[in-house]
Image (cartoon, rainbow, N blue to C red; front, top):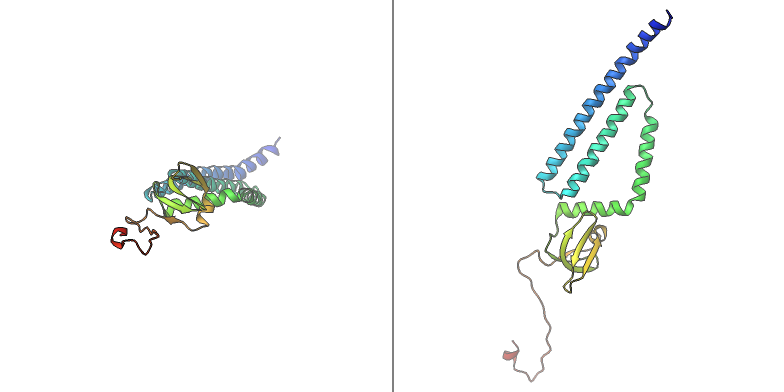
Length: 190
């Protein structure tokens, strides 16, 4: 019993400081992650980015920072974190490969919302279709054709092709070809 008490005191002294430091690191890290999330949210709101992208990017930023804080906290406690980092990297690669098409559509939607080559109400041609833009979503664009059909185009297909925005300018030129015989009066034709 006499051997256990000094050993227990040594253990509490050694690991107690590490546990206190880990708790402080976790608390401060969560606070910093929340502050960065709030900053990203305010910055994107100021730039007038779509609300869906603001929510997604701020949540992704918070989760990434919180993951870093948790790994740093575990490292402070003496846990080997190299295997955690490898597992997180492998999981990220697997998720990225599985969601390759969706991530391409998301990235294209992010760029469409950021650069705004067209807006809701514009008449465009792109991705093999023409119509009036009804809705710009994170993954797709919804068009309405002149004959009242709805076309949904994946954003990656739309950005991978030429986009013609007929509504971008105030005036449009329209060319018509008419057949006129030689015997017709040209003044009446005009």
